[in-house]
Image 1 (cartoon, helix red, strand yellow):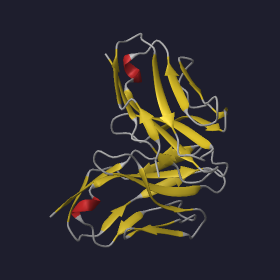
Image 2 (cartoon, helix red, strand yellow):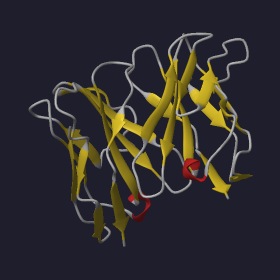
Image 3 (cartoon, chains in turn yellow, brown):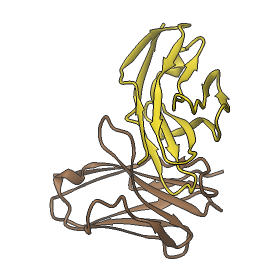
Image 4 (cartoon, chains in turn yellow, brown):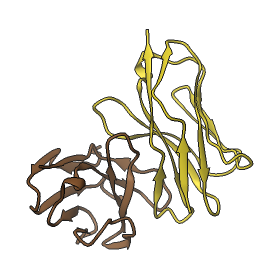
Length: 112
Length: 113
């Protein structure tokens, strides 16, 4: 079956620190991979995506590379800001796109 | 343009009552999804519509849950004989097509007393 496992939080970083949030997946076939973000008091928003192996998704300084050999899609940012404080969800969709499978979310707090 | 709209934003009701949750997707989005999110968890798939038909309802937990999308736009999630365990945030999402990124509403927070 399909599933996503992401690193547990909460994560607390100082401003300008380097961020990594690990995500690994199990899937049949060739899924598409996504990172969604939920800012305080807001709904889920797409942050970035990758649809095939070795693709790199990027947005707002965040990056994630689709690694088929390690079944991973780790989220990284070189220098976090206070405004990046949110909950981050890794997700996959199977090739049919019928279902999205979400991880449990990782809460990030960035302190000045 | 308008995003996915869900109403009500909050619903509190007593155990055993019937509830309806509404989702108005982004105009032109043919795919519509319902999820349930419990505290500290990621969204859990319930049902997916392509147009008017439920293409996959394998995530509905039991026969107390039902969803419709009669005209291929607005969808209603219906829960009969509610139980305290049904308390969660119910999320709706729409997308322009299969496998495309989903756009989420702000959810309906359902509390069963």
